[in-house]
Length: 115
Image 1 (cartoon, rainbow, N blue to C red):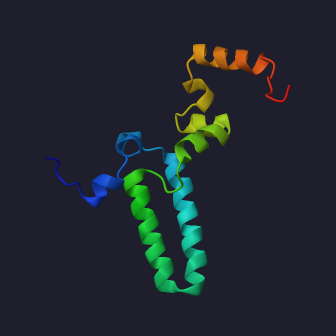
Image 2 (cartoon, rainbow, N blue to C red):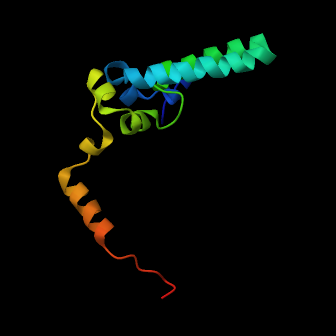
């Protein structure tokens, strides 16, 4: 018998929150939330306010608003920015053996079904 989880438990992502929270990801997502809410707020202030609260709630629970932000941030931000936050680019997280296999596959000729 499973115990029903609360909505916060269902939405939460502990691997991206608390000590694991990525500060650049959080700042980027909060900026996106503010801009989106401001644009929506031009049409309807209550809708803009509700959207901002919902977005900030998701960022608090999940660590991000835009899916994939932790990976995207580490992939596309300059190394100097990542270093300021104690992060490394995504490529450094891949074991050397896997990088060698991927590099070897890149050198293989492409085989087509048409031939």
